[in-house]
Length: 245
Ligand SMILES: NC(=O)c1ccc[n+]([C@@H]2O[C@H](COP(=O)([O-])OP(=O)(O)OC[C@H]3O[C@@H](n4cnc5c(N)ncnc54)[C@H](OP(=O)(O)O)[C@@H]3O)[C@@H](O)[C@H]2O)c1
Image 1 (cartoon, rainbow, N blue to C red):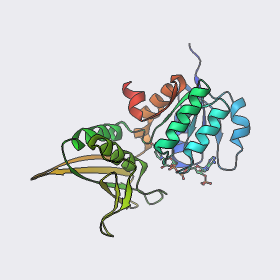
Image 2 (spheres, protein in one colour):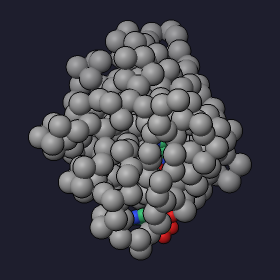
Image 3 (spheres, protein in one colour):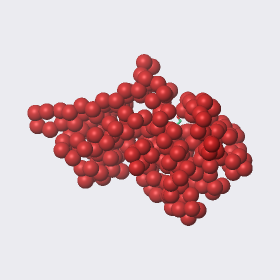
């Protein structure tokens, strides 16, 4: 029998981190070798933990800094945290390649979510107008969600618009415009994670909708992404690389 893939979790006391720890503890393929919460000096000990890959799920905006620190100690980052920019992703890629390492940035581990994004990208080539309505539980700290931003940016690239262009909605109650797509964020206690992309052309609309009711939807994507991060060169972005490459 081949050895299990050794994985550390950073942000192990958070919602996603706890789920990842449970998944790894119950797995015959992966071994949880270290779990770090806020305040733990993981930079000092993770290199010696035996972890080949670190699952990073902390605070939006911190993922790239943590990823670079992990690469610095020879551990491959799988960054789940929202907010890694394209420029940061390139920096991570360069740093990994310089060290002969790899990793992956995955804004959303759900299969349904990535399929919805891929379908939205196809549709964006044919429909000039689009808006996204995303809904999450009120404990979510960032808005719009990383998935909504990623969807809007991918659609902008498909249409030839600037994916990094962010501006307030044209009217105060009309969301934030990202790469030409307006995003509306709902934060309500009855919601878990939901996204609707509504595309429109003359006389018609096309609605793509994805709903998650719990973290179980992340499990196959996390497993595929860990396997991919353990073997790839450089740090790319997107679950589709792990699922379909
Ligand atoms: N890729 C995906 O599919 C996916 C899915 C869900 C969520 N996310 C993203 O993943 C991130 C975490 O989400 P969540 O819902 O788990 O958030 P959460 O419940 O707030 O958990 C984050 C955890 O990270 C801890 N933390 C903060 N800084 C840390 C550090 N330097 N070292 C170790 N731990 C640290 C926090 O501690 P404190 O509580 O003390 O601050 C908290 O326990 C967010 O950016 C979220 O948007 C991604």
